[in-house]
Length: 280
Image 1 (cartoon, rainbow, N blue to C red):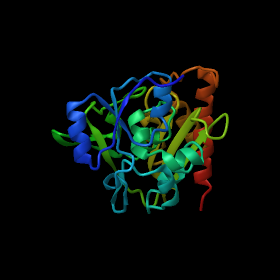
Image 2 (image 1 turned 90 degrees about the vertical axis):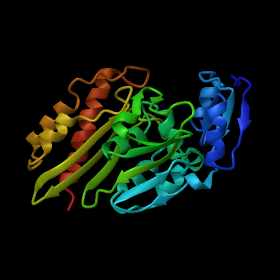
Image 3 (image 1 turned 120 degrees about the vertical axis):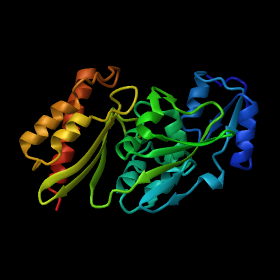
Image 4 (image 1 turned 45 degrees about the vertical axis):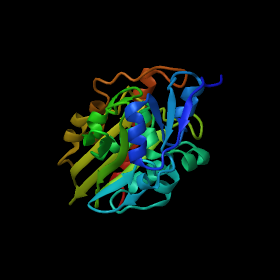
């Protein structure tokens, strides 16, 4: 299907984009790897596309105790850039789609689309990242846990632009992003972002977030709390597995049933924790 007729505006700056969005009904285009397919299916029918994908002021990766990632940073840039304390970001970016998607798609575009099976929402939820949002009214900051409202729904208003993502670094943590897909390049059937800090053989901190199991990222705080101050024994892992799926009702579709996804959640968590436990 061809998309409905739509206007196209390409601003030279963020301010120009904000001026246009403030007075016109538009949809921000930041890479198009999610938006264009939705336009073709006529799920979205905006009057204008406001293309910010090539705005250099929104494309950056800045290191520090709190790192910053510009919204128009390409997946491929993140995949090739090692940020101390954020190795999981590089790993996740390298698993987004295929090489064409990684070369064209942007971090902000993926986050703004908020697909329930996308990789970044779970990642930035686990990292307690902060979304920096700009509009003509000013700038506001929203925690990742509050940014994702539901399937394809975020805290972004129609005249907003996601400017950057602020991410605390986690030096000394074991980090991993794992996902199960039916075919290479697919969205996650289930994905897991996991960070673990151990001292003297005990778990001092753990952060767990799943994608693909609901309308928004699932962070099982009970499972995290159950693992803290443990030796990460088989019994500790088994208890965390059960708590991780407590109250979760993943969707059923052609790729897998709800019960199958719950089992995948448990196995992903078990295998990743055991892998980290065995790391030197």
